[in-house]
Image 1 (cartoon, rainbow, N blue to C red):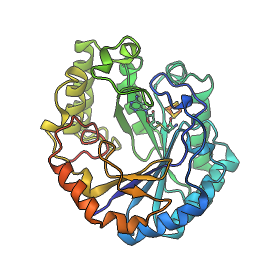
Image 2 (image 1 turned 90 degrees about the horizontal axis):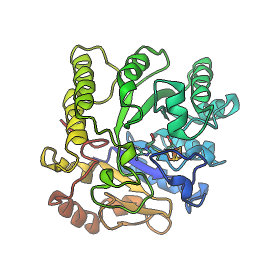
Image 3 (image 1 turned 45 degrees about the vertical axis):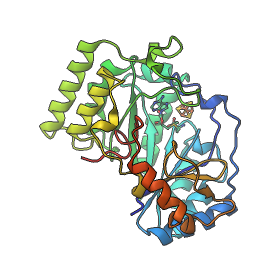
Length: 320
Ligand SMILES: C[S@@+](CC[C@H](N)C(=O)[O-])C[C@H]1O[C@@H](n2cnc3c(N)ncnc32)[C@H](O)[C@@H]1O
Ligand code: SF4
């Protein structure tokens, strides 16, 4: 059953984060607000309880974000966005809430303000997020907030302080940790973490990695991190990834992506997995028909046999 559809609604971004090069992309998207009505109708027909994740680039750069969310809400779909939080103010928060946004993932990459701002390349970014939390809390029946943290060499020492703080912080619904992947929007290369352009981001102190993950796993086992999304086994997988990044992630995890996840890119292309060919394009095709098509089943069978090292089975599509 389709559980989640991720839609890239904005290619560009105005931040220059150390681990993401989306700022190099042109602003915009080929999917216009008129197209979303059709997309959400089809998704609701496939599964009325599915989640819609609107992402970018920076999704709040889109002026019509409120209309897009409202269209999802009209179909009874729960929508979430992932944002750097910089464009949040009272008016924006109120409009997002009124449009029916369900959950907001906010990227927070440090326990210390200076660490977050440095990684994000934007002084004042941390303060904006904390201020946004206060605004969101002040609005009745507002959406949930879930801080999300990418583990890098620059912030791994702050990881425990961060999760302990976020667990206690009254506005948090869920805490999410992300493993570092090759900086986004860069041509894929093997062993990227050893490449001199990116290796400064990769935590390479084995003792430190083991110590931090041991503490984290112990806290999780003792039930002290109830808001942390990642399970104990998943955290063990994360630790292993940082210690032995070339070990095949898929060896330990079966792929369940083919039946539960769908991606729509900013040019409208629809894929079940970014390593597979597109199923079609939402600008020309009906999503419901695509999902149940012969072509989709062919790709599903291909995915079952896939042996590619795949981060999705360790992160978003993780299953025990
Ligand atoms: C590409 S961003 C887009 C949303 C928004 N601009 C933001 O920063 O939250 C989506 C998520 O990916 C994370 N991210 C960025 N670069 C990453 C990388 N190299 N590896 C893993 N996650 C990364 C971000 O921190 C963010 O939480
Ligand atoms: S992580 Fe988000 S805020 Fe940072 S450059 Fe990428 S898209 Fe922009």
